[in-house]
Image (cartoon, rainbow, N blue to C red; front, side, top):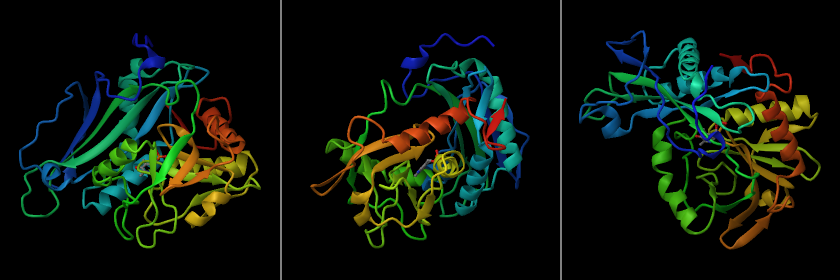
Length: 340
Ligand SMILES: *Cc1c(COP(=O)(O)O)cnc(C)c1O
């Protein structure tokens, strides 16, 4: 496969249009057969449901080249399942899981020239999404939808090594109890923009959101789950019905237990105990783990012992093992790596 002549390690995280995307439409109660298309535009009626009441959801996953030259993707079945659950909660028609996985494979295959070569640190980001297309003016679910997957090559998340982040405890809430925090809905991001722009303006990299009801428990950031390491090397991730079930975080728990022999627990984490942790990281598809060095709560600084220069040692082991599995250097658990 002849690769595109792109500056793979310098491309950053933005939209680069490729030739092919996958599209399927839902009408009269059924999804059509779906197909690949070169048309990158979406033309909608001015009253389309997505434009009025934000009926839209999405997923994110990556394809990349392994050390031995295979094109693979990571656990697409979990993205299929999560989008299925998200769609249900938003009263959208679920896209069948087998078809989701098939569409993922088709769109990677069709854009194989854009899957960055091994060693570049870059990958091909896939964005599956769905939105209501027919006119909706009274508040109700749309009756017609479009499911699409486009792809875009993205550069290495950390250029020149992972620099620990500084977070601030947000005064805004990300998700209400019994709300939509556990699904990947566009609306969760729309309302987070003001909070992240404000945090950046104040010099922070990310927000730490606490639970909306009591503001005593750690939830997550705008787009990544927390992972903590205790001083006796136990991995801890917050449990809450209003955080998004990150596939990276769930995979890291398995890596901690089954590959590194560490104890790992998912439980409520009170903000008061954050000062006692040895390491902290943010988990998500984009960066796998971003180390956190400092968390600021209204002027009170919590400085993680791992410091502001590098990942903590356990975080580093988790990162190296999961990326080793993804890159084909370490034997994966069954079903994690899907070859294209
Ligand atoms: C997508 C997302 C994550 C990360 O999930 P992954 O499946 O690991 O990419 C975490 N939190 C939120 C709010 C998200 O939307």
